Image (cartoon, rainbow, N blue to C red; front, side, top):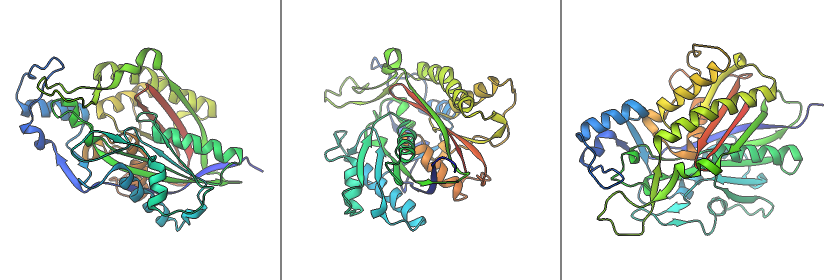
Length: 357
């Protein structure tokens, strides 16, 4: 008998209806960290931003929606698409970084936890369904999937719902050019125990580089010297983060493949956290260089960042759901395909997972 496998049996996502084009930022006043105005016209700033990130629009949640609301909608999408009884869930793992943040404020609210709110909104009565939150930076959803795999292979769970949800539009400094990167959204997967299955999670790896690199992504005050509030906003050292990701993520992916004994030639897709198009492309090129392969296979790295922006923990599960539902151009995942998931984010945390469909 094959060992117990953790199999993704359903996916779901929620894309907020509000589309925010790059032209929205033409009226912003962009400042540097010292409060001085960024040189150049906003048109030129936005053009350069799009060239680097690939982002031309992103999604923001409605004013009345919070991260838990988006999570519930993604969860319902996954559960309803598979006709799964929610009461049969053993775990609800919700990855996020800021909890519920109401429109017009950037104060976080995680009492009760987002997972508890999801369970409440779904009206699940089973007390043996454990809900908890996971804060692990942008790799949070993937780490939740890794944790679900541990529960299933240990025999502790048969069915887990893993959700990534975020409303980053509520915690950005409008005077910071990096504010154009961030977006809102939610994605979810249902993971179930299966015996004698060829499909399922093969292996995974994760690392935390906090001692040197934790300050690369932090919360800090607005770049606007006139803002005397105590509000805190996402701040990142973009150049150093880029170098960190390039130096560490490819190595971790290779370690994961080596651990599985799977050559990269068998990998059909790499679903990487949609952080920055230029950075993701560089990570993939570096990965293939580790195998002395100079040219990337066509279509191996699907991208949605151009139209959805960076929604942190929601990017990978949303991308997966859209591909499986034939909503990402010519992209598809077929039974038997081996797919790599990889992410990098605040902490600094990185992780990778190999899955066979």
